[in-house]
Image (tube, rainbow, N blue to C red; front, side, top):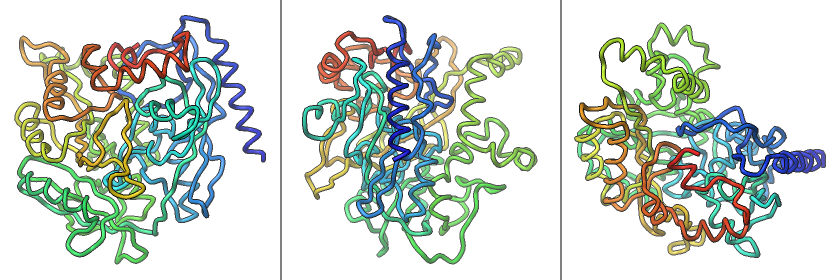
Length: 459
């Protein structure tokens, strides 16, 4: 009862802070962490979400959890694992919030069978642009908001509470690291595993991978288990992604598996020296986290220290290329070859995806603001870094070429980072007509920043 009362008080405070924002002023959340890579102008004030970061309850019988919108997956997992449960999809970075994963999308290694995080949401309370809190479900009076909320990026409101499904897990995840020297063979394996959820006679509960080059890529197959010979620890001196080349078999506790990518921000911690053996010994383990690295990046965006050093050394300016894209499985090998030849960043993360089919084949629903095709296998391809701006080129040219290649392959890209689409293309790709209809209903005065403005013009 205390949790419910405290939640009601926090929602009331959120509504008061929203009412206090002057008309015409940008509306943003007042939050300490972010996993966005879109520089934005700072608002004069933010919405008070300070009381909306907890787990309201876990029902181990129904296998559900009621969670506040600003609750991080790190906090949620800490509450569910003692019950032998976890969310159906746990995005790979600790400080991603439940509300953020739903309104901005998320993905992880269970997505080949469980889809995206919003697909396990059974209902959610949303603070709308009209200042009201409504409960949206798959059917009922607010089904339109339920369907349009994923990938709306806060342009249709903010989730204050979500009820999500959970799945049972065991103590460990046994891993098989499969090496491929041919990308077509890798995609064929993904298709077989997605269809059968098995490989070489054993079940597969989780699947992702890494491409180091077109002739060296790995699929990592995870199986829940209560009995493994030994477990590895990649929170100390060892670095997880390097292990894929060294160990055909591995095992982690479920907890360490869920956060295996967070310690080194996949491989991006190398940019800060955190993978150098001496630096790693001196860098406190509690600071080897994605949110710490992200704060360093934000400081660099603000002060441009590295860019100044590059100019002093006579090196070319660099373009940030930080993207996750979904490519149909049958076009994935082709896209990866194009990417290697034209962008050349490595490593690259691979995460198979298929929209969830809770009632069996053919039961997946579509989501209008991120219209992946039900029944279609995709691979999420993640690449995060920067490339030199070629002489005569402009900042953004490489990202524009990636957008073009993704569209030609029949894919989509996530909107947490830089986007360059014109408005007509954006509306066509991201359900502009549906978004406008839902926005007009729930935000008739258009107080919230539009989706295109958030994603492309960085408003």
